[in-house]
Image (cartoon, rainbow, N blue to C red):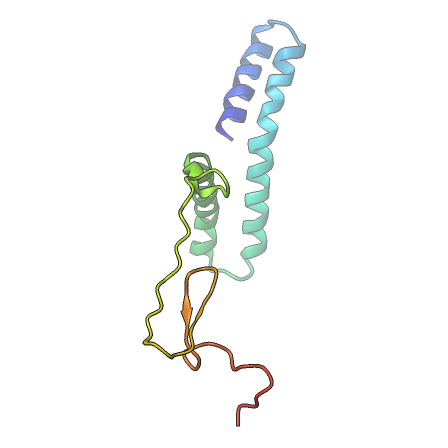
Length: 129
């Protein structure tokens, strides 16, 4: 958004200065991105005005722009370890059974210990009554 605005302004300055035609015109086309975004935000605000009070609807464009900029910054600065397969390998550990001898427990792949009747589904073939 910022890059499109800056490139577009540089293109407009180049067109006004008379330094060529093609490259300044293409750079000025960079203004289409922020203009399209602003049109979309104002369109959403106009459609929401039927449901919102006027003071709330007046603040909606600023709220949407703030939300989108924050999401963009979070996307660009998020740590690589959040991407599957890019983080450090974590050792897989199985949990030790928390029950005494003779109790039926199942250790799942995730390391959780399930005991019958403690949140696990009923065994197949038996009715609940």
